[in-house]
Length: 122
Image 1: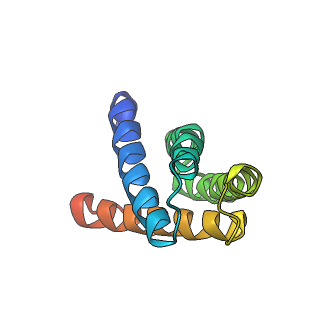
Image 2: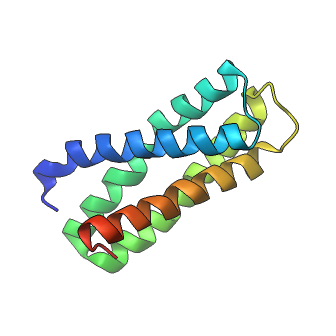
């Protein structure tokens, strides 16, 4: 991927993430509009960082540094989102960190499958 393609990739990744996490969230019982809005807003903050920063690490330092950076950023996103969900969700039936883990897990692995089948990216 070329750096000039990054904005398009970021928008595509954000849209796919929002679709996946909203659908999975609804399956988990997140039905309040406010809670669904929190899922959308928190991903608008975290997703562009998790997508863009590893691209620059890959470009500058190589694939290994990109993978390490991605792992660190995914953990940070999980923690941040879990905190936000615990603090602001009206639905307190499931711990926010569990919700964050499930939502991020689904969006990460489905995103990896999409990349693999559409682009051959591993």
